[in-house]
Length: 365
Ligand code: F6R
Image (cartoon, rainbow, N blue to C red; front, side, top):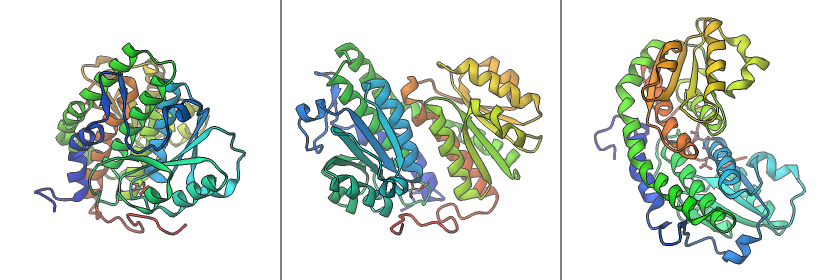
């Protein structure tokens, strides 16, 4: 039931702190400074020999796979490839021995993801699932995996599944890292960062009213650009997808530095750009990308850390997001983007929970 919310999408956006707590429950092992999973069905010895990981999925789940690539390469130093499931199933790439494949899926019923997992299994590789729906086709087809425990996601636009997937991938990265070079101390500090996450997301939700005002201002845009770098590049893609799906406004996500290689030609005074610019390693670089857009007359909406006068001096609208460790930023930063698409869609009279032409699970290829 809607429990007082106007739409399932909004309810599910607000459920994210709890969904994250559920994803982490019983999985953080303080004594060993690592994560624990009950259903990987592989021994630490087997997992120790993994030399490459392929993450595959579709749509929003493909975006969390992109976040997973940064996470696993960063924390565990294992090379990762991200593949659209629809491409992987027919592409026939050479896959080395000791490659582990993860299918990322909310529903567990996406036809392409299921087929991609079956195909890699047929070739003799281990195929695991990061999945929300217990007992779904992909959960059954996989050799093992991790459930999100996010609860049912009813709104067609995926929200809490995305943040839960990113959280599970962060825990997997911690686990793989601790089987390798990651020290006890580093493991402990990652666990601390994870523990603070639900409260940070709770705090990010307090921007709702402000986001609604921003939505009013930009509701008639016909194109919106979403820009971020590193961990926030997939966040930009996800923000753009949310807007397309439910408000039918054309949107594109790019790594911010790619702008000057073409997309900046789209910028004019009616084409807003959403910059994801929290404090972190590429802050100065994104700042100059943002100034470039501003100099060409493009309206700028910035998602920035609290108290950032430098961003405030450049952007037309600033939405403050709580500061968290860089590897967890996508989980916090996507929240205002989900809300932005929700409010713009509402203002345009769109059916938020059942957008045109879309189905909750895509069981045809
Ligand atoms: C976007 C959305 C879709 C799904 C995609 C994969 O909001 O919902 O892009 O993410 O169809 O679905 P699952 O995760 O069920 O495999």
